[in-house]
Length: 377
Image: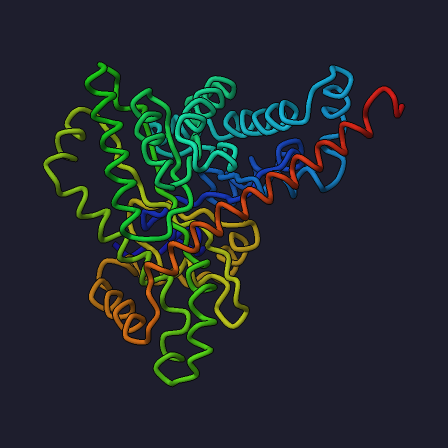
């Protein structure tokens, strides 16, 4: 259908894209800003990551009181980080709970990430996912688990236990298919254990802009007209073909059997949708990925840009483009650029970046505890 509603975010929501905010802070919670975005910007979910928490802790004084309480209680740095981040996410879950109820448990979700230093440790990831799930203790929580090879069985195990999972750091279509398999295996195990499949939810976070950030410099180095033509096209083509894989997964007898038992589909989630190259339209990774049954999680700046001038003109900018998208990846290969090599490196880099942000978070909280400790008062 073609929407006639007034704003780009109205049209985006009407076309079946769930608008989520890729940001969270104590300041947003205590000022009511998050609640305002739910009402004024169609925000129906929130994602967090170590970078977001590190930035929030380093800004302003919103955490000083809690840091003081933790310091006086003698909390260690790791426990303090766990307490602070789970408190923020629990409060955000409460803000989003009306959306969760109104959408039949589909949206109104808030994500918290397993310590990224565990990305290559299956058992530790499962243990931490359980602890986060129990501590936040809200049905509209997502536990973020990376789509590393070691993360895949952790996804299956968590889903099997009834823990809703946001699978993060997906860059390749091949890995995305493995994520879908891990999700379905978890649902099958949950069904065998007699669990109600209805409340178990999952999204698969397919990262977008980082693909262009990795490929564009290679195209620029080639310096040919064909390379220039492909600039800024790889990320969107890659994401569109991931959606094709999603559609294929829904057509299988395996999925139909789970759906008949009450399972929710694992929606693709477009992550890393902030534009890194100022030469591109700042809403490009939103406008070009409009299709039903997806989530687009946006940094605050991207959300406001879409609200102001997003070009959400078509009811579907994805499903009619599969042949064209495949041609883009084939053309890159012809130029000697392997999308598989690029996405493999992006996963390695993504884990490393989140580990670095986690270390920054630990450092910030350590300094905060030291400043608030009884010995410094």
